[in-house]
Image: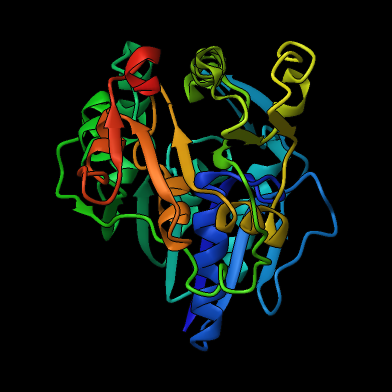
Length: 319
């Protein structure tokens, strides 16, 4: 079986959707499928063993609400996408984040194969999104199978004024990723944060709560480790937190070692998380989860497999 996965984001940058697509590609390849990923990459040499990667060009950072997406905005890519689907026949084309320009949108238009669409994001209501959805609705509603990764993401389709049948299939993580990490003896309770340095990720909320924890004379009992894109630049701002370590982007074994050696994964995101794959990664390593009670997280966490605190409330987080 020939499968084409369409990823509109920079495949060389770790992120929830990207990790999902890469792990799915590896899983399908291991099951004997012929897998191709149509995407954009800032690294020309990015590769996945036995998976074809078609890099349509260099991405650019574009601000979407409270986050930044690295996507391809090139008119030349439209012709490349058209030619790609003209000369290649696939049993299934699986398009992720279907309404993100340019790769996903024009893959919807030009794909001649059975097509699956997966919506990952949780969006706020906006006339811009509604207008965008209206323009693309004729192509979207003709596709064979439509998926969202959570009920929260499903509800977000109302933003586009879409009401066609949808199947909800949660994210997963690779079963092979977390079994070869080095366990390190520690004398402090280790709290881990994994995510980009963005307002919606709740970075400042977590650091302010941790400062309050230190004021309770518990400095020698806790350690906070923060990992993610642009996280390291926070070191100067919070240099008084000498029991807090700041790392930039980590992946693979370097990241998984931190998961396995942490006691708690804290994800204090304040909005726009439809699922939160970091929560699943923590669970896969038997790391306790503490998260804000936003819609996407509360679908997954039920106070048995983790704890929720009131969104944007640092005192509730501290307690």
